[in-house]
Length: 121
Image (cartoon, rainbow, N blue to C red; front, side, top):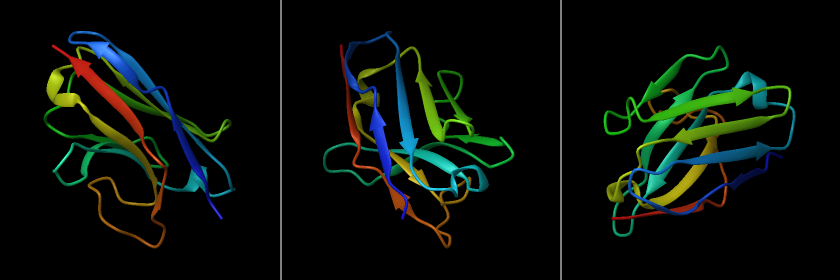
């Protein structure tokens, strides 16, 4: 069984930065694509960024140049560095293990509980 625990969310002013972390239990972390998704109130959950087991990355157009995804396989941890934050980045951010680089559902599809990111103007 895989458990994902996100941390690092909070309230930040526009233009500020936050770094999210996702700690994974289990032994399949390093072999799978990991991703960050976000869901704003009343909207669907969308892919923000993903990173494959070989460190290939994919970003949503809205965050390119501002966000950076990385992983530490030795620590079973996924990160999302968010810079130049905007009010429209406000959402609950979820960590995912198993979906493809473009969010395609695969054999594994595990989710964390989410962490709130609020960007004030």
